[in-house]
Image (tube, rainbow, N blue to C red):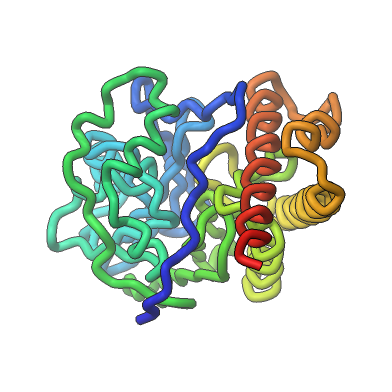
Length: 314
């Protein structure tokens, strides 16, 4: 097991900033079948969290567990309604609390799986609650989160899970939205749950560790390794994989090259934000445009801060 300290999410946010609404209030999860024994559990109010369940003859695996134990219970119930196979596994695509605070709703008979890096990041519950509190818009939902169940089994690159006539592959390709992003791939169906790592084309990702260069390398590695048709993102709608990859790589390349050029030119971060903007027509509706603009400004800030940290270290 590696002993390095993973990159941490930068908690600073540009102002004004529109946080994604992740409150459990009003959340319903609609099952959508993607293949034999493969279901997305889609939030009725994007950008609230999506989940999923994959099951075979012997066992079922749930993808992410929601922002509170109560949401985790709901996910467990929805999965049990779709299959008689016992839930034996949960896969956490990230360490973020909106994907993992519901882990405690699953008993000891359920094994939590994730990357080694995600597990290492799950070491400060109060810090993580503070990081997600902005997306609660004053609701007290996170008060019920008093413990944080960490993964039981971790991996560095790849883990295969046999559910009985159905196999699920878990992959970690390197830094992305966070340091430990995990993809949950069902190879028979060409479907992958991407968590926060890969979003539909036209949606701006959140580069929370400020490293668009490594993020690009991770996305390329994933696209070269995996044969996938559709992605189920952690937030938003099911989308075709190729346009998502192409969009992501183009955006990350522009982000990294522009901020690096302007940082070297001595521009301050506010000036870069004012000059490096998204096209006016960007985003399919008002909510997406508002989130895209906020995430883009955040990505400029986190990338700039990372470059500053690197410069200070020489």
